[in-house]
Length: 381
Image 1 (cartoon, rainbow, N blue to C red):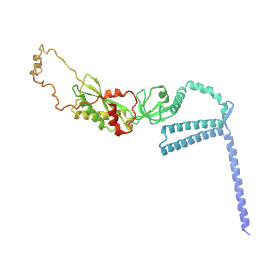
Image 2 (cartoon, rainbow, N blue to C red):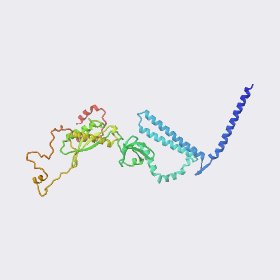
Image 3 (cartoon, rainbow, N blue to C red):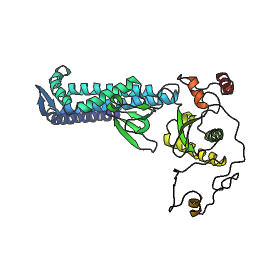
Image 4 (cartoon, one colour):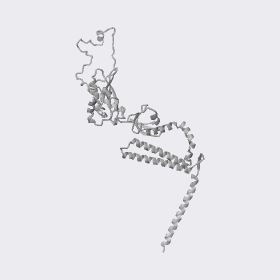
């Protein structure tokens, strides 16, 4: 008998609580409504209120969050599917980011109270701004879009600018491109420099390239011995791509200098060495120094020949006697001259520079079958 009145009282209490809550919400909204409807300013007949501005900020923030989530999803997709080109994924992610931000700004303008159809009011002011202060920014933005679609420059490429800056492309942003040097220094280069200037892309078509290491030896050194020593040095460097075939190391005699016979060691490098210019050349010079010393080949100092006609009024043998040197006896070797080496020079080998000319200017394709490199080289000869 008493359970029914108790349940009725609980229902009545709940109903009363809901009425109180609704009244409080209605009173609170009535208190906030004047603040939300407060007019901040007017633009071209459009009124910008606090509510519209908050809604616009929320839309732009939502666009940024959605863009971040989509870019992370594309990054995870690239990590799971290694066959997908990372540069293409980067281009897609940047374009998705730009499109979402543009849509968010357009929707935000409409929520603020500025219809997109009437946005032409700002076109004149925007054009004047681009003509003066924003010209460089707009130029860099368009240049960045060109780089993304042209594919002449992509993330991961090793590039060299006209200023001598070298590094790996890490990101192509709206205004500038981030380049990281081999010393782990980040450099921001305006995008317009890549479009209007000369850029050397070391890894654009292929990651394999050839380096030329110059060195010199003393006059009178057998060139065949020099070639043998240089090839042994190249074989000791792990970055040498191949020791036989079309991409084998070559030794060229390039000139007769004032103090030395000048040579060049031309070596094709492996993929991991494509972006380490200074360090790779230093590695080959280190091994060249070791190999030349092992073969008894002198790396000369700068030197000049001094011819003296007279010393203190003396000439000929009398002049030599002043320096404590007796004239050489006919039929005997001059003790001041270095003794001839007893070891016989190596057998004559092919002229690598002549082979390079005979091959022509056709691009070198990577060796697919390394076991047949010797047969290919034999057929070329």
